[in-house]
Length: 411
Image (cartoon, rainbow, N blue to C red; front, side, top):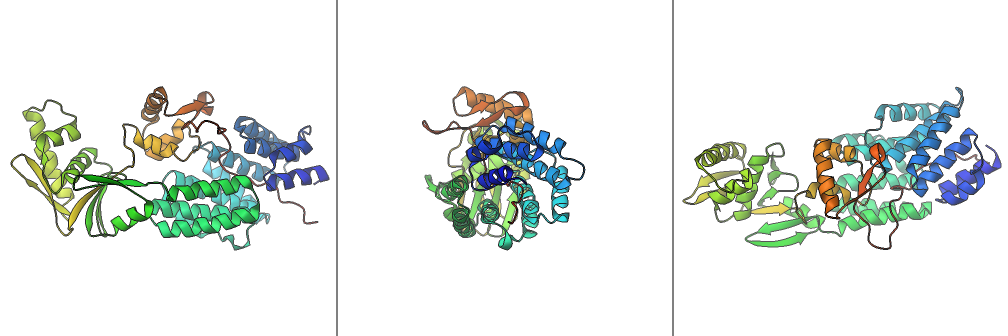
């Protein structure tokens, strides 16, 4: 590599995209195109960045497979930053294999972390953990070590392991400081703030209070029967019953859990489970059928007894029943929960992460946009959605500072 390419690569490694552009902005040779693409991505122009990287990948000759593979890795990270989760994982895996075969273990590992982060975003925690187990960060540069710890923290947060998450973020902060990349440090700080933000709302005995992640973790290990409206499960110690695919049954369980230790009136159950404002005999008959199904699903955890005015949840072993809900609930709360990470998402990526149809998600986004709760930028397939930033903050930007330039010469 010539001196300008080397200097531009060093600038990118230090988190200085403008410094990199000053050195290669007027050049159209493949290495310069690749570095320009990475620089534009870090500056937030994702469309231009993708075009430059594709030009670079096409311009590298047949003997430059490693350079093309690096372009594919960079494109994949742009897609991840833009929350375009449909990008071809097979192409990234092939690029990673090429990099490993040619001894570029740093960029190969970076490709592995991109795939792990994608799995994390779409909720495939077991797969993410298996992929992460094959990556040893001890000999990686600080930026990649920070990425490793961020993934560990992300999995731990979703597993409700607060201590593990805090320890991983402390290591990530140290590695980010060693890397000296301000945007990476900011990403670690943003992840750390999640642990100091209310994670759920506890409803018990007619009272409500917000819980941090540590408190949610402690609650899951308590002797209470937890009706978890965040994950649509009921939990008593190690026993878990999922009603995620049975929305009517969970609506009934939630109403019963919220009313405990009292019973829930039939009118309340009908309204919450069937949205029946004026119930007739057919609604009451259906309620009896669904209560029977709920009894069968919960038989290990609790019974459901009939009362004069409705039904009551009777735990088998637990001392009490508590309801765990989202900190803020509204009609499209699940969509807002994903957008709360501060990044921009495509409607297709949200649909994939939520397990819903893209049309359903688009209707939710349109409704939230009309209320001023979300905003979009871009058009057609490049359209992205995010929560409006506070006044005075710049947005949207590049979601991660971990794009790697080609390895620098050792001299």
